[in-house]
Length: 344
Image (tube, rainbow, N blue to C red):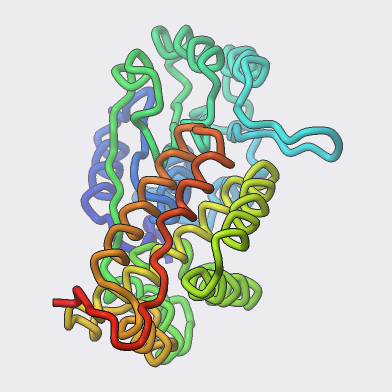
């Protein structure tokens, strides 16, 4: 079965399919939206659609579609922050990587109709890398399509953004994620749970359905989130230091941890507000209800906002230790027995 086969974001997908079928796709795109909502998957689908020879591309079954899906296609180039085996981790996509792209796109396609360059995460390009890319975006070769995948597109230079067609991706309804999981063979009961835990992110749900370790990491993150209110300040500052060290090694993993923390504290606020049926972490309903009783609603709400701000600060390259220390200072403490409550 062919087609784009993505979960949710039908408006974005339909716009891309229409551009391909009309024969007038943009030379450069920004796929903007939250993490794990399908941007990277859509980028691969667009690469397949641009090179597939079927009447209604992408067919997903021809040799070209298969090779692109496996990232083995000569005319597909993916650029990301380079991993290191020794020394400090790279923090950005470099000028040298963009110069390599510039040299590659000057060549005609080797086995397809279009060369496709996917830059993910595009917001991690250094200023120098963005300026190097800008030279190519100003006069892109006709056989090349650039796709900049970004969870924080505002960090891209305005000169880069202005030369790309922006396609917005958003969080996906739980019902759509559940249906998509079932269609792909996930047990209905598991699909129901994962679609709620995904918090609108089909990419996370699809991975969790086949990766038990991902759910184990989620459990660890939620345990850590719950433990914060019972820690003294010294322990919380120690936790901030460990999280900061982890951030230097793996920014994505720490952002996912903070996302899980956000889901936990959001569930507490929902429960305190009388909207407990809307919580995401259904398997922890009793723990959430207990904490909702013991924690001050105003302080929980303030901490929830602090978590959102901290994720934004870390993405904007604020020093991680400072941002995380500040976050820990705002953790709500459990109320003493008989203390007044603001849960009204």
